[in-house]
Length: 63
Image 1 (spheres, one colour):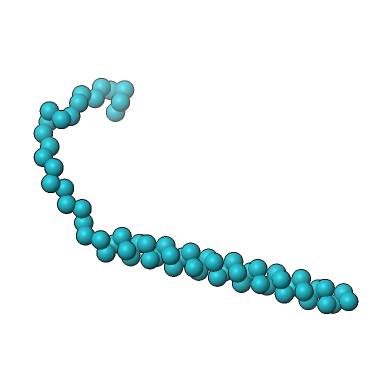
Image 2 (cartoon, helix red, strand yellow):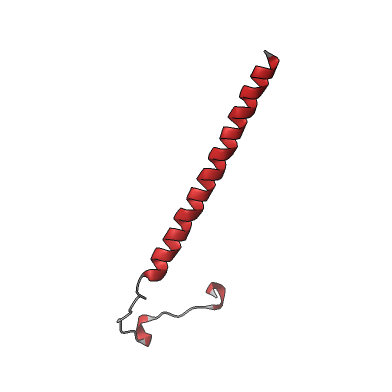
């Protein structure tokens, strides 16, 4: 009786460990996929025209 209960507890703990490892691997692969997708995007082209009168004065406290 005790050995059966011990076996069930070990089995459940092993399944939990396997599930955690599997979810970690899945999350890692998703993150790699996002990085590869972002790296494959073309760089942002900025066609704005900027001039000095668009800026503002910054005093010492804001630096």
